[in-house]
Image (cartoon, rainbow, N blue to C red):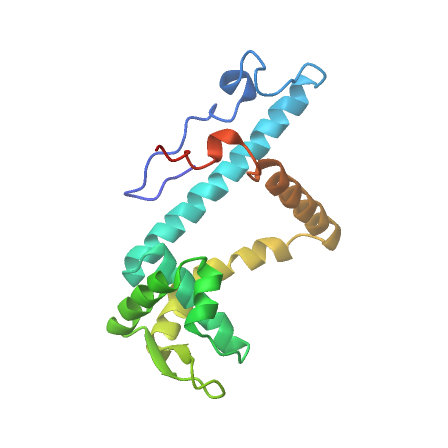
Length: 194
């Protein structure tokens, strides 16, 4: 695998080898599986690792190119989709989408407006609300660069048959369910000390 100049070197080839990562089967009992199946699953995990690496590189390059942070980029993407669907974006809707407080949303919108990425105007039907719109220049810049690169994912999905896409969807949904944090004690906020 050829790395992009300036990016970290690729992971060692055996990082997803379960026999190296979990030699005593403390995490995964592989005793009933064939060696070939374990190796094949390792290859699948390595492919997911390469996808995560490519996504991280694309995300980092996007943030650098647009000179924005992750929340700013997510807000702009939301504003592009809202405009495409003829919906009206409000500060409250943006806060809910980003799962941030209204105070944080105000700061985010101030930054984006100051940088010329958005405009605020009166909401057409709610006098108490504002309508937030992405500027034409920012929208075009995002679409021509980051958006165009992200859209290439569609080509990979389009090369699959409908049945293959169903398998991939089922696999990704299952994997998401397997790793979603529910009530794991180690992942909970620390109890406040009195």
